[in-house]
Image 1 (cartoon, rainbow, N blue to C red):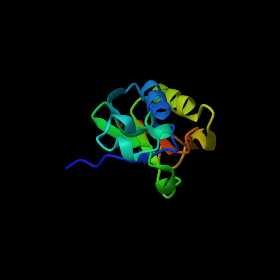
Image 2: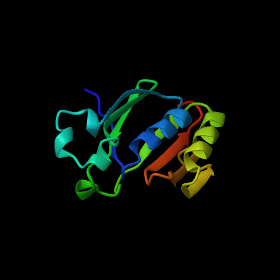
Image 3: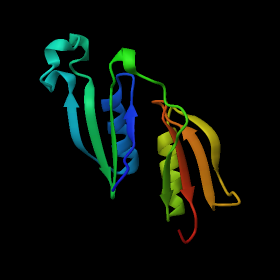
Length: 136
């Protein structure tokens, strides 16, 4: 069994996944627009270029998401995507990259449970936690 996060966006899924691929060194493995589906004629034309499903592989992990139609979008709440690395420089790079045009909630710093830990909300409204612990 594998659990993969599935993120919803307000019409900017493609932009978000390109950003995440760049930040995390991932590869987009799937990207399907509403216009490419058999139900395209039931979707408003302005949504035909929006993403109904995307997937990105980063290492052994898969991040998935899409642009739910406007009336079914729910703002992210009650979770964070957590990235743990064994490299302190990588933790710094990831934190800085993901924080671009976002909001830092807790700067990357030493805590009682990690050598470096920080929290942010990226420019797409997705909350992240970055953790480096020596010897993880």
